[in-house]
Length: 381
Image 1 (cartoon, rainbow, N blue to C red):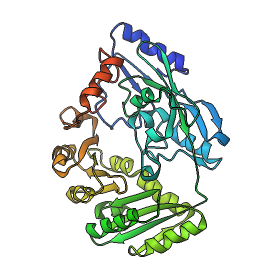
Image 2: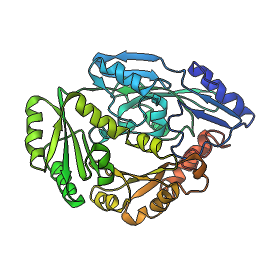
Image 3: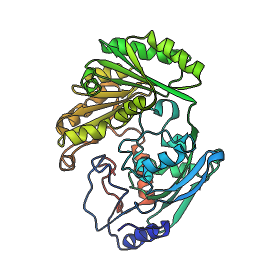
Image 4: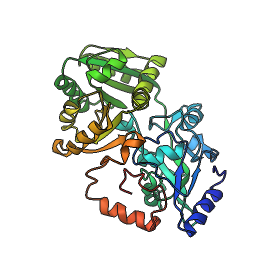
């Protein structure tokens, strides 16, 4: 089923919940390999038909859209006014706004602009009681009730169904230029990253690729990719300072868009090429990032200014084994993507952390009978 209004979504949740029937909820299904298994359910529906723009005020830098709107369409719409929601999620061509928020996906520019929690100013969601709850609003400084909306971010639809999201928008920079710098060793790449972080420069993205990942960009070496924005004077300064880090090239216009599109879509491209493959995601300190990257045996990409690392494995069992030992590196890790048939036999999230009990209680408040998207939160909820 694909309801066309938020009220219909609320009713589609309420009726089966009354009879203790399980429910599967998704957007466009672009991230079915992500997180926990898609367990069989009594009822299922998608929010793809909720695709209206409810309110857009370019001068106020705000937009409210329904959850089924494709992320690529949101990007195109606000881009016409030289505005953006710079989350850079993977699967952007197919993913819906609700799916991006529910999975809390982001990409290279999280270093400067943050994640969904930093971009969302309001939300509407439907509960299993059949109620539509509105939290926050369309004013950037309005934080009333926003904490409840934040519970939905990263919940994988295990608490409620997101029906609409309000974003604060960011103006596009006057100019942008990107740089790709090569290094012979991980240590020298990390040293360059540290010099960037200590400088007065504030690049939007600092990504690090190991040689196995760099081959996809035609460079079988350690790579640091930098995305910079500002006026012409700022861009000139970036070029001067980054040229001192090592050998590299600068990209403008469509060439840099191609570069960052490949960075954003690295995971979808890997999964398409490796049907039995899996992706591990680890969060660590900036200091600990070097050890995490050194431990990954295959292709690896890091948001090097944020402490997020992605490891790519041709076998799901190898990804799970690496994740199980990630704590010894000071990292928190999950098997983020894996083949559906492998998930039931893997520990996808071996160390959920100290806040796990709070998460379990929140789930009980919203869904005491565990009816909604069972197991989707890495088989823990």
